Amino acid sequence: MKSKFEPGDKVKFLNQTGGGIVTKVTDDFVFVQDDTGFDIPMQPDELIRMADMQGAGKLFNAAMEDHLKGKGTPLPSAMPMAAKVSVPLTPDEEIKQLKNQVANLKDQVAKLKKQLSNLQQQNTRSLTDNILLQHQVAPGEAEVDLHIDMLTERPADLTPHEAFEMQMHYFRLCMNHAFANKMKKVTFIHGVGKGILKDEINKELKQYDNVHFFEAPMSKYGVGATEVYFK
Picture 1 (tube, helix red, strand yellow):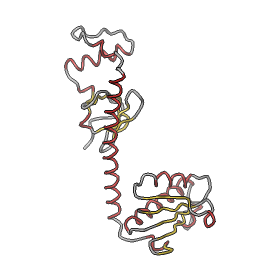
Picture 2 (cartoon, helix red, strand yellow):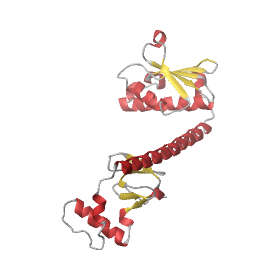
Picture 3 (cartoon, rainbow, N blue to C red):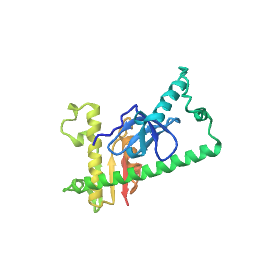
Picture 4 (cartoon, one colour):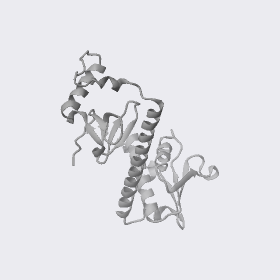
């Protein structure tokens, strides 16, 4: 179902003070940039688009927007309390607002983690073979060489970007198989180079709650390998 929100929409929060501009829309969340410049993931039903407001609310918001832009449009006389909108928040009010935002972010992070876990489980269930068997060095342990010439017979035909994408795809595939087959440890040999592949692998490994990873022993691999331990 297509979201009724689009990037650029001005929205208000229904369950807390504040609002902002929609920067990104996914299947599950609408990301709203508030006045601090921070993108907050929100559920669609927790937002109202300012353009959807009716009657006095819509009139007030339009007038206030022109007023803040310095167009000189007078605020509606039927709203004598409008000037209070520009009054700065007290420290207590600011603290309360920030606490509300933190609580909301924690809730959204928990939902995102659950969604990630579900996707990982679905992906794992779709796997029927254990490709790590060809890399196994001991029961429950494997060693995967991600050098591009180990993954394709024609590495020279690939652009650097294509080679990088192939290496990352194989890394993710091996991680899925490791979870599916309850591996204890997988060592990924990524080489040194410019460090791009190593950095990206480390970045993705940090997203898992159930793994530990370290640089592999220098005496055996130099500085070009990472050991991943599965809890």
